[in-house]
Image (cartoon, rainbow, N blue to C red; front, side, top):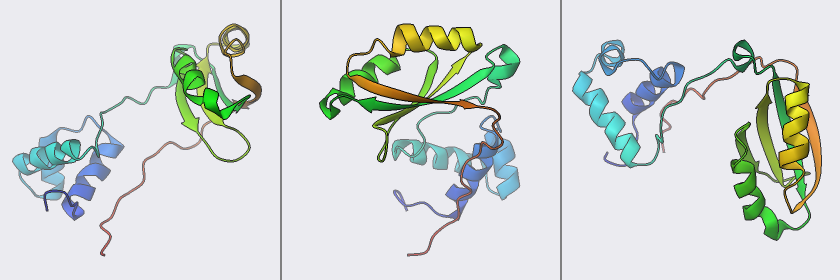
Length: 156
């Protein structure tokens, strides 16, 4: 059981995926287990590398960052991948970077306060990265869903 998940583990993950700030005592009450059990299970899942941290879900628009943009990036040479990723990682407006298959080599998500801010980041920071051959931009009009998968135990 040390490196195997069971339904209690999945139920803990489901509750905390909904709200990572739920106290372990509340999780324990919902699952009818002891708070110590929740604490031990969480420690086990961290040690397994299953849980790597906890984050806040932020409403960027309410904080004045009104644009969410996705960029499909084409590399001039695939060998430039690591260097391009490192430089994209240094741009604070970039919040997700994916190495993908298909049409693009890299797909990123970024936020900007407005179109002027986006233009500044795009032209000054992103286009200046050596190894980028081309970019396609997609501006998000509205996000309608953000969630985690609901996990259930799978029998082998």
